[in-house]
Picture 1: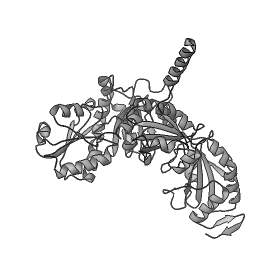
Picture 2: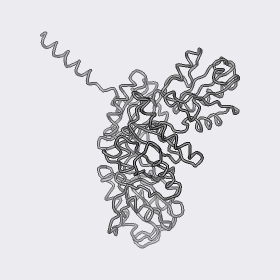
Picture 3: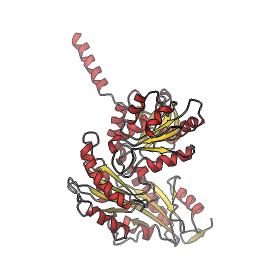
Picture 4: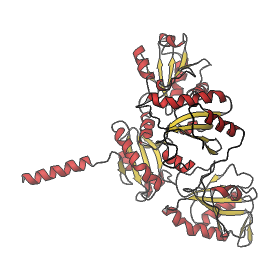
Length: 488
C-alpha cells in the first residue's frame, strides 16, 4: 500500500514538473479559460509550420519568465479550427493579445523569449511610474532601456494629463515616469515643467549628451516626434525588440560580440569607432547602429549570406535601406575607421553592388504557373503592363501543397489571358520584396498594372471560383477565360 502511494506521489510530482507554462487551449475551453486572465498572449499555430516550430521554445521560455504576471497560451489550429476561424487566423503563427477573454490587439513585437518578455511586461502596470523621491528617479533611469520622464508642478497640471495620454499610447515601445515635484528636474536643467529623455547609462559617450530636454509645446504628437528623433542617438544598440523601428530609415549596423550585460567596456570599444566615423557622415540620411552578431546570426545567414566562420572577432558591417536594398562591407574593419569610410564613400557614390538572396532564374518557365525568384521578380511581377497574382510559399508547407492543384487549374484557366500572370515564389530561399508582408504560408498578393507599389493581399477562399471572383472584381482588364472575354 505504501509503495503504491509513493508511486502515485512520484507520478504526480513528475506531471507537475513536466507541466508547461503556456496553456494549451481549444474550442471547448478557450472562452472560459481566457476570461480568467486580465492579460493573455495567445499563439495560434500549426504543428507542421516551420516558423511555429522555431518560435515554440522561445514562447515557452517567455511563458516561464512571465509566470504570475502575464499568461501565455497556444491553440493548435489543425485541431481547433473553430476558435482560429473566429479570430480571423489565416497564417501561422498568429499572435494576439487578449484582455479578460476579449481580442484586444495583434501582437507585433519580437518573437524571442526576451523580446516577448519585455514586450508583454510593458502591457502590465501603470502607463507612467510616479516618482516621488530623487532615489526613485535615479533607480528608474539606471536601466537597460531609455527613460522618458515628465516633471510637472502638481497632480492637476494640464501638461501631466497630456503626458499620461502619450504614455498610454506609447507604453509598448518606451518607458515612462513622472514627478509632481519640479525640483526633481533641476539637476538636469529643467526649472519649469519639462520632459527629459535619458539615454541608457551603458551607452554614455563623448559624442552626445546623455539627457535631452524637450522644450516644445507638449502634445501627444510633438512628444512622439521628440522621442522618435532623439531616443536612439548617434549609434544605438539594435536589438530584436527595436530593429523594426530603426529600420524605417537607411541603416548601417556593425555586428560583433557585443554584450552589455557582461562586458560594457568591450562592447563600447567597437561602438566608439563606429561613432567616430558616423560623426563625419551626419546629415547624409544614414543611421548607424551596433548589434550582437549571435542574436542576429540566423538573419545574417539568410539575408546577407554570412557563413558561420565569416567575420571572426571583427565587426561585420551591413547596410539595409528603407527600400529593402542590402549591402555588405567585404573589407576587414580597421580600428582607424579607414575601411568603413571607404565603404561609406562607395555607398553614397552608388558604387556598391546590392546583395540579393535568390535561387537561379529558371532556364525554362513556360508552364501556366510562372516561377519567380528574387532576381526575376522585377521582370515578372513588376511588369508594368500585366496584373500578377503571386503566391509566396514554403516547400514544406502542407497548405501550400494542398493549394497547388487549385492554383495550377486557375493558371490553366487564364493561360490565354494576355493581361494577367499567375505566379509563385519560394519565400524561404528568395528575398521577399518590399511591400509584401509574408508571415505565414501561403500568402498571396495581387499586383496590378500601374500600381505595383500597392499590392493587394488576397484574403478570400481557396477554390478556383473564389480566385476568379476576386480577379473579375480587381483586374485591370476583363478576364479572358478559355479564349472568351469575361466582362467585369
